[in-house]
Image (cartoon, rainbow, N blue to C red; front, side, top):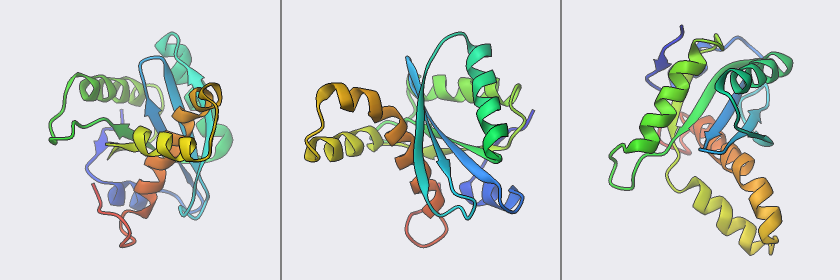
Length: 160
């Protein structure tokens, strides 16, 4: 089983040329997915998966990863504002551990503090309806998380 890597930079070094990264915003009810381009420059919102049984969720993620040429995973880690890790972090870490047993790709965590709030502010500024925001927030949060990870090491964001 691949273990979580200490940094995004290490994850990038392990990728095969042309491989993409898949970003995941793991929530209690849904998993937002975002996909990088092959140059690891831009993250695009992809889809939102309604969570069901873990085995089925892991299989869907594995299938998407295989179809899209994914070489690594970036999971948003919901660290508290004071830097501590609460129950949500523990839940995401357990999800990552279980996923690593089924999806044989390296993975790293990215601090997702404020990602959903930032995305929600942007959607409110765009005057999106509540229904439309609910349908898109998770995949946009995944894109926000993945974009932050992609920018790490390029002087635009601090590597976590």
